[in-house]
Length: 76
Image 1 (cartoon, one colour):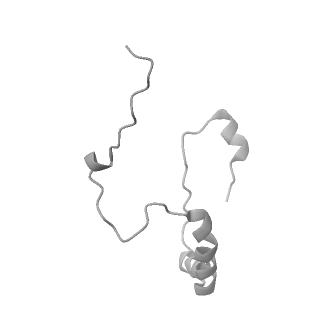
Image 2 (image 1 turned 120 degrees about the vertical axis):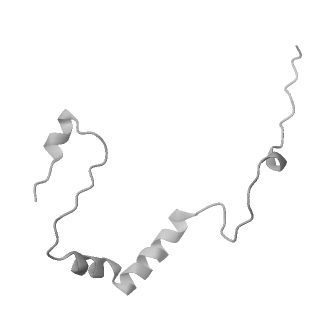
């Protein structure tokens, strides 16, 4: 056993990463304002609301219910 640390291994050549046209780093924090502005110009949210008008409300329950969750329930 030695006190010198082992040299860091470079695993890039051992992992298959396909070449793509999109960047590996998403940069959502920088891109999100432009995306939201584009959606506002296109009226995406308003069109979705118009399409759903008169339909049954869809509620996505994310996770199991807990005792404390009852205080945050919203009734339609």
